Length: 194
Image 1 (cartoon, rainbow, N blue to C red):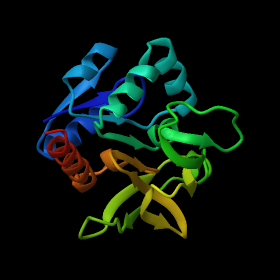
Image 2 (spheres, helix red, strand yellow):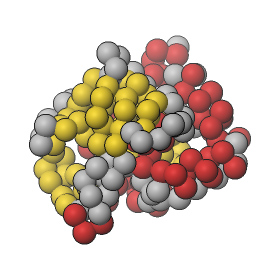
Image 3 (tube, helix red, strand yellow):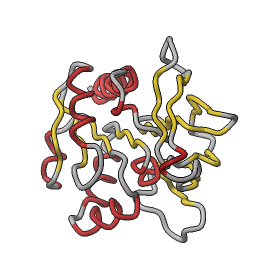
Image 4 (tube, rainbow, N blue to C red):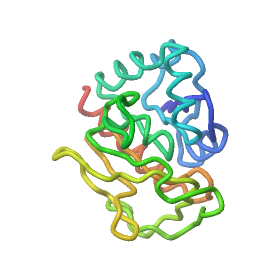
């Protein structure tokens, strides 16, 4: 199984390490044509506006939408969650507009308000370690979206079919169970394709 990490900005090496610890091959994705070789794609944290601009500059917007249309799983973490969303609070447009959710940027405040917590996630037996850094929040979801976890009553992990979104940074811990969950989604999608 080959999982790409969009390498325009953000915690690329950390995601690749987590993918490999979870049992798949991690690939740093810098060119659109690399998407053809992948079974799944991670859009990492970073700065969502910058990632969106770079995705437009290097023609990734339509390419990633096409990747999604093929039913290939995509996982957005922190800024990557914002890039996946159909709606961003306080902004006219969004980026990929793939996942039926509204998100609020920097909902948890500034860098100094960053924190870690043990977070129960539906589909994973024990709570996972979640690192929140200037994290966004999912403020609304459409009927197709499953809420997988909440923190203080706010949605922080969600899934819509082959799309997965987390407000936090699972790649900044030694806990790879959310990456394993994503690999499970890739296996499911491969079965559906056959």
